[in-house]
Image 1: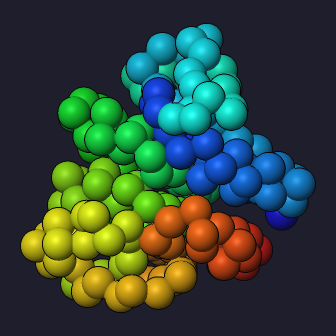
Image 2: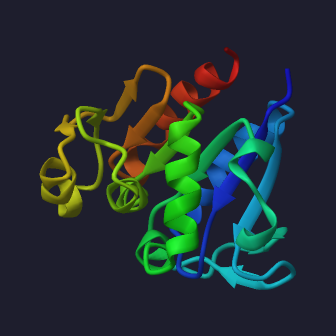
Image 3: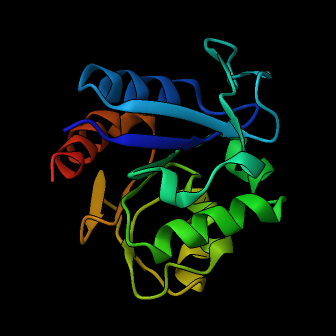
Length: 172
């Protein structure tokens, strides 16, 4: 069954950490909605390999509108965590017990949303101490699936495992 996937993304996202999961999700017939502050804006990846047009403003969406959430890494999560609207969206999503897919620095938004205490996660080594300080159990693995709710990976090197596990969760 086709799922609706929200993607929280900003300038300087990790190109492949956005494009490869999105391409795999679309190939599996899921719908992608790119969300930032203004619909219609074009944003670019960190290496300028990929760009995309924002589909919806954060002000025009609700966690109820979607079945899953993708937060790619790069510098994008650092930009988004400065805006309380994105943190509230992530918190609401987590409180609805819907799957959240994060790779690399994506868990920064989970940390600020205060939703990872007691959860099992992995992330980029640079922010592993922040994940631990927020109360999560940090595992240095290619992919970690915490009860089909938080699917996390460390980096672009783990994309294949991340995509495979994310697609498995979307089939449920």
